[in-house]
Amino acid sequence: MKICWITIYVRDMEESLKFYTQILGLEVKRTFSAGPGMEICFLEGNGTDLELICDAEHKRVTYGQDISVGFTVDSLDQTIAGLKEKGITRITGPISPNPSISFIFIKDPNGLKIQLAEEKSF
Image (cartoon, rainbow, N blue to C red):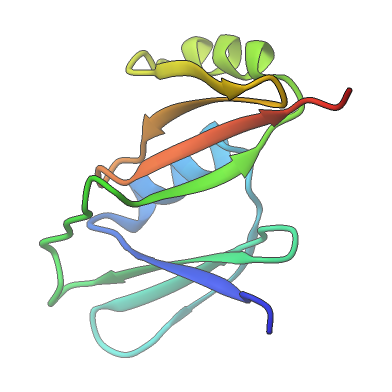
């Protein structure tokens, strides 16, 4: 079994697309209307896509504190510098629970925790 996508409900599709494409660098795979007031966008996730759903009837979006979506990055230092250049200043970390990984957390426009991790090989 393979995870094919992760679904995230968003309050504002334009704002969320800006974050996921311009801040995280994901690419739009496809978008479509799923009926009146509902827009769906799939972002290329290199094996597991990210599905954003904006539904006019579902504007109250909440995420638990114990949920995050993780992405790997080549360099955590370069990623942090790039985030700061793009105006992302609320960064938690870096955290290194062991020598093989370091990561940070930021939040998307809806409050979902995004984990950006650098895996280190020895």
